[in-house]
Amino acid sequence: MRKIRVLLADDHTVLRKGLKVLLEREGDIEVMGEAADGIEACRLAFALQPDVVVLDLSMPELNGVECTAKLKAEIPGVKIVILTMYDDPDYIRRVLALGAEAYVLKKALDTELLTAIRSAYVGEMYIYPSLAATVWKEGAGTRERNGAELSEREKEVLKGLVLGYTNEEIAQELYISVKTVETHRRRITEKLGVSKRSELVRYARKNGLVRFEEI
Image (cartoon, rainbow, N blue to C red; front, side, top):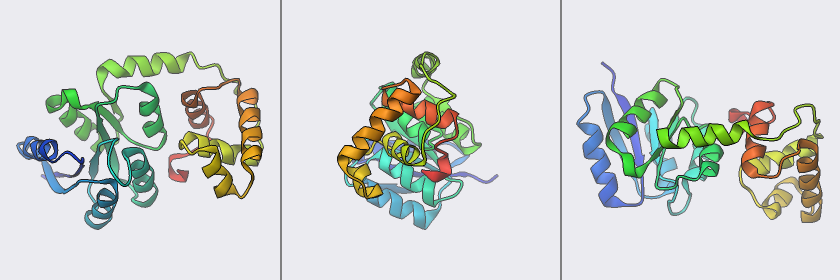
């Protein structure tokens, strides 16, 4: 039986070593490598081509969100499991918008992490149970106008917002002024009838304005 090849990325050495021991007790999982920061995680992922990358959100150099975006854009088929202490629904929506398959809290390693890895491997989404209800409940209450049409420039700005870029970063990327970005941002929220980033993420995904392969 082919094992699930996993790359571990966490800047806490003790936790990372513990995770390796936990995973390698399982007959269907193989830990291919370990990384202590985001840059190393991406480098090893490109070199080793793992099936699943377990990422901490808070890492030096590149954080988990940045790593997720980079890996999903450059390694076809790689699955991402976020392992973190943060239970903020906005974080969950952000990494899911980037294509991550699973989100697990560090306080529930063991069974939850193993389930998340196996689910991600077969392309299924997994969110830590106590967080899933909150995420979907809040998402169901999003006020959105599905008929609203955005201009091409507004769509580009929306992509930047979904990725969590600042107004300055979006302006630099699109070669426009910060004031212009602010204007587009205001028009986007007015057209869509939303204001929170999590609502923008949900709208963009639901309406096909931001596809995983584009991010």
